[in-house]
Length: 193
Image (cartoon, rainbow, N blue to C red; front, side, top):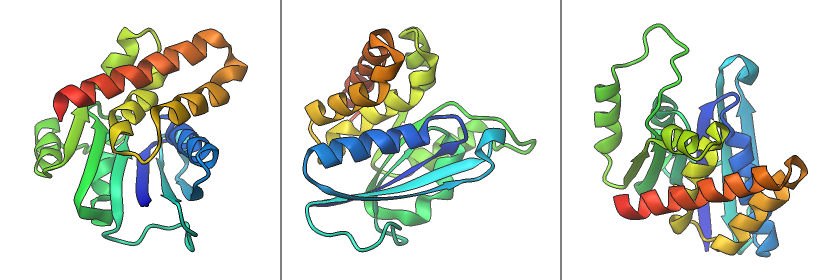
């Protein structure tokens, strides 16, 4: 078993939190993991991406080669397109539908959605809206993790425990809101697929 996941977004959207949840869940499941990340002026709205590789055998590189990503999870739709060359032919795309308009020539949303939907295995979710409705607008990333969870080689229990572990210092309310966001993402994705 092995899975290669690219996480993409803009600084402050929780890309590294998704990576930390995946890492924690994988380690708790006695799996091998390698992770690499790039922060592109992340505190100023720059691109952030992470390569996460999980396997039951030894992993030799922390970088995913072109055409070898099983999944791209993106918290920003245009950032998703930047990493398409890494996706396998039958790979899964999971993205929030909400743009982070930090450039003047941001593409038209309909064109952007059309390009994303042209890939057969896509989950396009209004994760930001879901997170706000749950009372935790910062949980957009966890909604997307929930949406991708059924395609991950990690159990729901290990992912939820990882969320609890990572957020417990912020208090039980924050933990419960993030678990709720995870479940809502999973529910929405099940209805979409």
